[in-house]
Structures are given as C-alpha cells and as structure tokens.
Length: 328
Image (cartoon, rainbow, N blue to C red):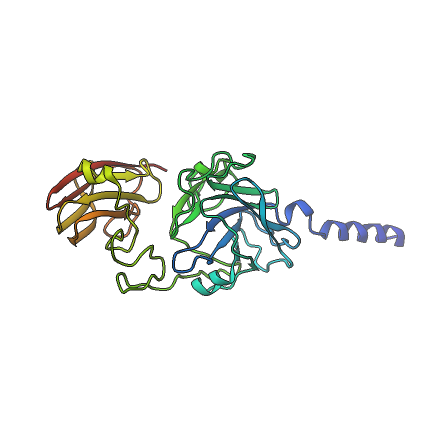
C-alpha cells in the first residue's frame, strides 16, 4: 500500500480510537443524596451512577450544589477520571465527615454544603435533583422531592429503578425529570467506584449518646427505636387514630400514634386476606406520642410488594387500625 494511504488510514484509526466526548461521561445519573445525621451533621455525600459502560472520563466535570433559591453554594470539580467504567458502576462524592462516619473512601471530596430543608444538586447540566422547599428553576427537576420536609436527618434520598425496564438496574427511563416521582427515602448506602459500600457505625438506643443513624436517644419526644416524635401533635393525641405518612408510600411508611397510658403494645401489618405480614413491635411503651417505621418488608426480610395493607395497634387505651397503600 502507498505510504500516503497508510498515513491516512493510520490517522483515521487514531481518530476513531479517541474517546468520543459525548460517550465518556454523560450516561450517568444522580442516584443518592445524604444530607447528614444528628450524630454527624457534616457527613454528607452524593452518588452518581453509570447506566452504560465507558462513562469513566469525568475529569473536568462537576457536582454543583444550590440552596433553596437556586443559588450555587458549592461546586466540586473532578480532577481525575475513575478506573471503573463498567455499566452500573458508581462514583462517590463525600465530605471528610462522611468518609469517617461510613468508613468508605470517596472518589471526590466535597464540603458540607447540602441544605437538608431544600436545595438542588446537579452533575454538570446532565442530571439534577431537587428536594424540600427548593424554589429555583424547575428545569430538569420538576416538583421537588418531599416538598414539605426536605431530606430526613437519617435517610438518604435514592433514585427509583422501577420506573422502566429492570427494577434493579439504572436505565435512562428511570429519570422522568420530576424529583418527586423519581426519588424515595431509603437507608443510606454510599458506594464508591471500586464497589466498596460504606456502613454507618452501630448504635445502642437509650444509652445516653446519639450515635449511628439515631435521631435521638431517649427522653421526651424520642421513640423506643430512637426516632423523634412530635410530642405536641394534638391530632394524634386527641383522635385515637393511627396516622400514616406518606400514604400511599413507596419505600418507608411512618406510623404515628399516642398512648394515654403506658402498657404492652403490639403493632402488626396485615395483608387484605388478614395474613400477618410483619410484626413491627411487641413490648411495653410509655405513655405519650410514638412513631414506628415500616420499610415494606415482611417478617422474613423480603419485600412485601405493592398493595393494600392494614396496620393494627393494640395497647392500653388504644385499639386502632388504618389502611396503608404501597405503590411502585
């Protein structure tokens, strides 16, 4: 072959082997945001995830955090690519406090600027999520997730994977650009690009120290599972009813109730046929307001699935049932 032709062929091969700019990083979504916990308020992180292979060329791209008005409060650029470009691989952006709290090394270190009450996070202009009282531009985020409350103090907001296709894989169709539809609350589970999963420290409820994912640690306004309760909530104190929020729910449902007097208390979830699905609690409770969370799983730890359920609470002075609706 003529040397000139060889040179042109070599040049074309070299150009073809160069990483296409559009295919190196943009097939990624924000899949998890955690805004801290009472035990470690600055333990914040963001996880982005690939939904196609070869998306590891993220150097020069940024995570951008905005406050409730849409004003940027932090920009964190990647200074290097990541090694793992496999489909479904994740990238962890976390504070130093989150690194210690979850015992996991991030791929990028950020500072604690995520506002729990309301804000927005974007991966460049590729994908964004908003929550709480965010009132900035709705482009790409639609209605904020949990507009009335923001990010709970011990929960992460996590992208749903069941909107389209496989319920266990991130796919392009799992993003409807409406944050209230695309995200749910879940237990925080930060994972870095090497596949290492962060784990929060263990905790012992009512030992006098707020630790792990506890919201409180005994005393007025603190449930037996160390979750805060609204002790001044007159509605649950005077109605004798069980209030469920959210309802319908996708991930967790919170049951709120009040006991006029202390006593043995049993909380059970039944399906429509009357079969017991989950015994949430059976032990003595003090008088006052309480809160229990059902994570949608049965007694064996399996996902109970979508459907209609009944929560029944029996105790001294309270025998109440309410309907729960779980959706996908």
